[in-house]
Length: 392
Image (cartoon, rainbow, N blue to C red; front, side, top):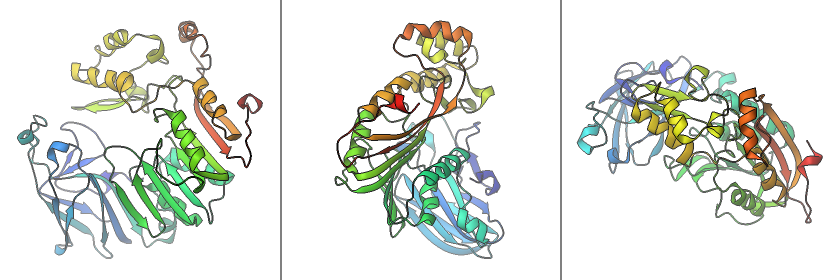
């Protein structure tokens, strides 16, 4: 996915004052650079703080200094599509507010609307066919999924659709009959129509509301480690899959591995992220064998009190991760009623000696090496059960 920094020019703030988030706030007047050969731009906007949410957000757009169109943004997540052939720049004029006016923060800047992503659709056939927006882990998982399952002419559901619906856009090239994506994140719109047979809907994977035996294929990328009550979600998948239908999931890092804390927090310029080694505040597996108080004392050496509080909440209380151990996933799948075709521990990391001693206290839980899991399951035409131990 192209970085926003390659598009933005004048009139933008980082999402947090002094922070380094990839998302940016639009000022009252802001400009975007339009790359050569661009036919269309998709601007993905979001309202992050409910306190700043008005009934509508007005946006005027000009191309090369000439008025193009005025829009009203009404949802938490909105996509504006611009036809911009031969244009070199886009200027935006938006309503602005002060967060301090709403007691949202002490931030005194005039803020317009948050730009999450820009998708550039080029006249170059190579870029048009691939969109060039998938993250690396998405690309790897999607290629693997398509090597195992054909989606042509099928009714397909994605659980855990990403913010820009990149995987849905990519899969459209493989000609499914219907392609639907769902996610229950609070910042998502209720519905985004992508094409006549492709849309996103804000739904809970544990209770989708779809008819039984409806989908030929369900797939999920980097989501199973986040779903609370995963057993209910898998039971729901079993219900909505037709007999013979397939479930593919590719996910991790799971809670029981060395990066299982999954921390990804930024506040006032401070950053903690499991994805960046120098920004990862946890020694391997420490989120498992240290107490929350011990972790707090460790974090206080490197972060402000507010940042420490934010990290502790995400890791130990937040609902963004499910805190399931490897053996929990095995049990859920073996109890699901689905036939397990493939169970692949595609990502492993050795356990350090210190952690090995500490982790013995967990007894039943013994696999702390596996970070990422790939599964392919099939809904049987008749009742049966697979045992994962036959596959690993």
